[in-house]
Length: 298
Image 1 (tube, rainbow, N blue to C red):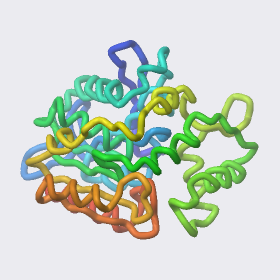
Image 2 (image 1 turned 120 degrees about the vertical axis):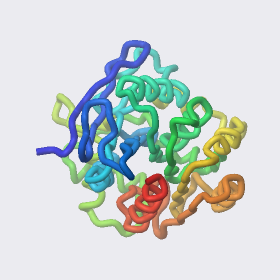
Image 3 (image 1 turned 90 degrees about the horizontal axis):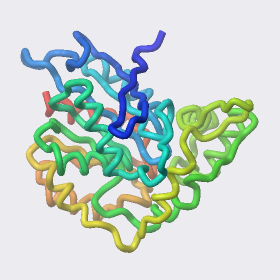
């Protein structure tokens, strides 16, 4: 028996999109679960990275759902959400619009955002349009400035439709591209990651669980002429904020994280040892930091 419900919503351009709903205590449809000082807690909205899906949070979400409603959407083109008819819609702006449709569908007025990589950029995007609805924020290994080396590495693998005969082969393939970010991890770790980001295809091969066309807009991104996202970051002022960074990250630098804290005083910044881009949020230090952030929201 799972501890979540598979649910769906519609994008404004007609796609059927999927989310995992971990109802939390005292949940009724469309309402946040749990109580905090006599008032309903806002739900936790978990936003995954570029090539990931709702399964990215399959350890963290159950841990939090004993006290919080947790919602983990599959962005368009990932997991159990429909693929876009036009690959040009695979952009952070469109993903934010899809999330707004989900929030409206569920009647959610306030939420806590936990965003990994692309999900963190989406969180900043949402802060520019609905800052009053964001109750707290966790940004995982991403910031307003993205290191060109990390972007170049992602460009090297995104959209490549490799397939594998077994989960062990898939795990070794993932380790080959991401081993530097998670050094020394055993085979079980890589099998677990493979099952989060891959799926069994109709022909029996194991494939990545996303539309390869998500790469098309991303590959056109000019890493040396990035948009100024600092105003979006500063739009998060006035609420609890946590920034997590992998010590080995090639996407979020120490200098950028320090500037993020300087611009938003009161932000907690935690660097996680022996991990790169991106921390899985299963790390004990990450879990403890997320718990502290949620206690501040309470």
